[in-house]
Length: 304
Image 1 (cartoon, rainbow, N blue to C red):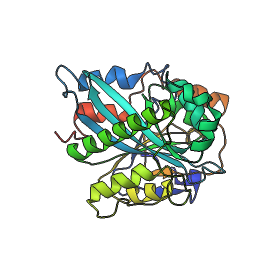
Image 2 (tube, one colour; image 1 turned 135 degrees about the vertical axis):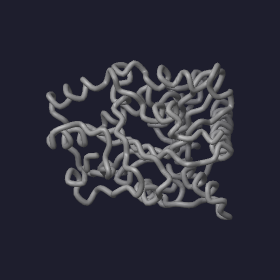
Image 3 (cartoon, helix red, strand yellow; image 1 turned 120 degrees about the horizontal axis):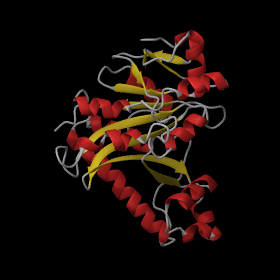
Image 4 (tube, rainbow, N blue to C red; image 1 turned 90 degrees about the vertical axis):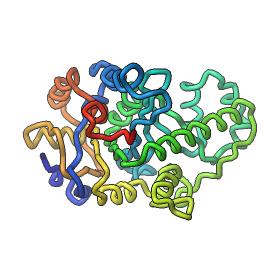
């Protein structure tokens, strides 16, 4: 296991458990031949889990960047069985604005509301839930990696019942929100507040549900603080999708790691060189999503 502590200095925190596996499969899903759906096919349907099963759930942390992303970004990701197929879906919260409208323009066919400027002004500043289908195979992770930020998966030891409850909650929220948008009715979500209600909303709800807490939220409004708390646990399994900055530093040390014992958190970053990009491109055709590997070999329990 290769330690990346020297790469990022104090911007890295050690892991209490087994370390983090490094996953190269999402850097270019086309070059990897869309491996989540391809290799994960046996997990559902004939010989696999029945429809409605939620096989795994992760808290995702996107790496820090200067500006409003200095504390990173966060989301929930689920692998579930629907209509005999493996569904990979991610849910994230943002502040309603032009970026969110642009996302809906590409994601929803019933988007007439996106041209209603009066309606959009009235909804400005609200928390809005986005749903990314196939975040790994579909390119969501790849886009963030191209922005030179890490994608860090914390696969949670949640029971099957809790996974299914959280997954259903997010699906209902998204459907209810979509109905309001299509009808051009006011959103019912609260206003975005950077230090109170932000992208961590559903993460803190999930942590509270896990702890069976009386309060609706546990954890921090800062994604990196939540990541630190998860790293201090011994029952969370981590996967690191490396940024070009991390790849560059690793190759300068001599090789691309299969695992790391610290998770890097750089704020200021450098790009990899053309020769370094060529080195990683050679890994893509055989790259396997780590979570799919774990589910297939039974080392990540489905709770069933």
